[in-house]
Length: 208
Image 1: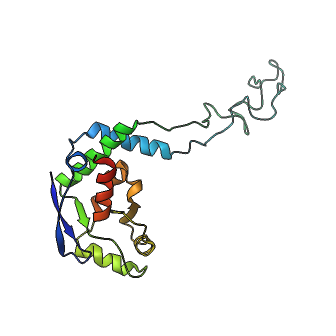
Image 2: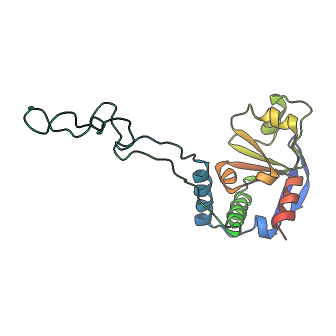
Image 3: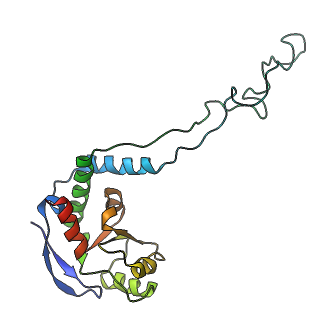
């Protein structure tokens, strides 16, 4: 059962916490994590691009000139791809890029990603993530205190409006409610910060 220190927002140690083996000490499964990341990115694709083929472009029903005797190349329609305003060859069409993963696979990928962060010392637990006012400088002090100088994800157990507003002006920092934690955001950030309450909720939902 892995153990981590609990930090305050000023960087001081507030205590220690035992983490669930099921969630935070799972076997590293890179193919499963890759599958979850690919599925996430695929599901974000809109797939709405569409252009017209020669059969869909308006007009072009009549042959522009007779087949032989004009000295010009033979043509069958003014909506063929080589004509201005003609159709597009192999035109892209709307499609669904979404991929499915079953619940157990998604959870397994998340557990593996979180466990890897713990093993690499890239997961930090804080007692809370709150600020008195929506001011970026307060969150900047928090990042400096914990030496978070790379891309960082903060997973919160409460939707603190001030903290969210104060964080969104920092390019390398992103916040997420614990209900929306996912494999992609965990692996896409160099550091993952969980509030103590977020850890407890994760273990309550997944640790049983």
